[in-house]
Image (cartoon, rainbow, N blue to C red; front, side, top):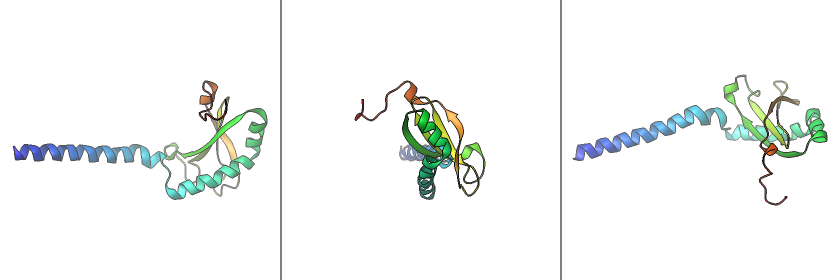
Length: 126
């Protein structure tokens, strides 16, 4: 009886540890920024707002939110896996660095915007 209990506890412990390790290896290490990367991303947002592509978008569409993220899975070296997403009511524009020194930000990807079908999530403005 005691051996079965120890075996069950060992199996549960091993399963939980494999789950945590697998979650980190498959998802978090590729898409979660480190503390240093969060600082870099926060410095990229003002550069995005000052860029010509952003100003053109701001003149044409209603900008609702600006977010940041990383995607190491898409390949490329530092800083090309960083992205700043500018969400409007029509589309999401993804900005990234145009060179290794990240002297300018440019819009190089587009995505669907949840705000085409939904209202902004903040309850302050209707």
